[in-house]
Length: 640
Ligand SMILES: Nc1ncnc2c1ncn2[C@@H]1O[C@H](COP(=O)(O)OP(=O)(O)OP(=O)(O)O)[C@@H](O)[C@H]1O
Image 1: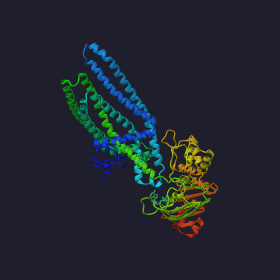
Image 2: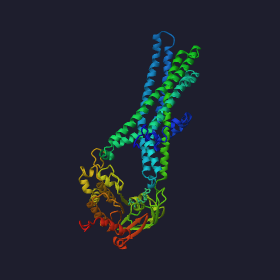
Image 3: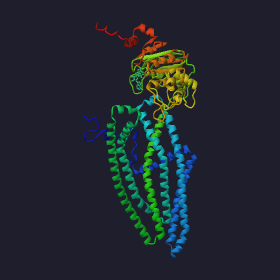
Image 4: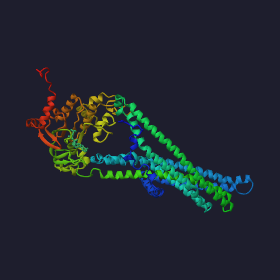
């Protein structure tokens, strides 16, 4: 059975359907021209509102400059006709040329003015677009980064925010420039039509005759481009995955040790060749469409010019006006091609922007509740009463009727098998989830009545796989108080000493200022155990009344682990505060004030180490099993 592509060269990319984040790609290729044109005014209003919110002055300036530029284009055309009128007038040639000079100067002045105005539009757009980008990104990330934890774990939400982040934000930035360009092209068409109407009302009928075939060809080639994009999109994504794997730091060691680079490179090349073949197909097809477009355009132009000739022959218009009409029609054709191409883009961009706005609206519905009482600064007691909690989409509850009590000054341990509900319980205590049934109370007040942000501020959580922030060592610790711009060096030092992070930091070039990320020049990489020490220091630095340690020492060496337990869990460093330790190494929980034993979401035993050992239940069995692992049988006694 082939592990990769089959003998015919078919592979996974051939069957790839549109990715969740590519649902709108090529949508304009499916929409009718009427649909696209019908939506344009709404899109322009939408983009206008975005721009207005970002910078009112710049928005007004772009509109004014754009209108002025279109007016200059129209005046330029009229002045050009004036030049032609003089040149085709009667009298000796030098006199006609002399008479045309003032109009010629006017044409040059108007064209120069238009160039200036267009430069003004570009400069203002350059000022406006980054502001829109920052405003959009800030709004989106501040919403997506604050939704409740259950939302982050919902696959649909996940897809939606990634789609919005990858595509929505990108196209929201593009749409501004594209809408400005569409508006410019539309104004140019109107200006051209206006000039033709002034020259002779009948000429206005000739504009569609000439420009429509060109427009139709532009529509065809734009659609072909989008269809092709849809075809190579899946392959392009797969190519990108191989590129990341070949360049990324995380995969580097394994790729080298398994010598699998060649396999990846071969796959990369195979896909790249497929994409190249598609590029060639598109190029040839585009050449055909362009040729057809030109042929139709030529036909249209031929008809137009024939009609013009007939009008000239019959004396309906003077020669100069006919020549001016040719100029205007040429310019109109150009503007229409631009208008058609960009309308497609704008239509598709708008779908992404609408999607981004819908995702933002959805995020707003999943934000934590606001308001409520401030969480107590001195936490005397946290009580869980008959708490049941089921993760969204799951039938079996992760916690099932849990009742427990945490008091100030105590160190409490949660132990139990994998998946028994310990971490879930810690997250409920931290206010990251609300119970499905039952209550969590802080000093007697239901946690649901407390302001979630103030509650989070009273809890420090240290997890087994802590986040690796690409900040300095000091910032990695200071961030637990919600800022990296200020830090208390003395308290950071004390936290680092208690967790053992001080020796890690001292060994780094740059010590506290060392950047903890190899992805940036001059950055350092830490081992898993060293990161664990930084994470514990981060938790301690917060000096929160509640400290939740979820297997924080699993990757530490025995001495480091011992040092953490000595300094953190003996109560001396955290008088009057609550400390919860989750651990599979039962030796570390022996001194806890109370141990809760979890099994399938329920608490099956609780008490001190001695009480639980005397009970000879599940805890005693687990402890004895682990302790036996450390007993080395004397050699030569087994078979005696
Ligand atoms: N984010 C989640 N979404 C859905 N189910 C989850 C989620 N996290 C945990 N669970 C499920 O909830 C149950 C309890 O998991 P929990 O992480 O609380 O166990 P644990 O006792 O901390 O396990 P371990 O010792 O392996 O860390 C498990 O069945 C697990 O599959």
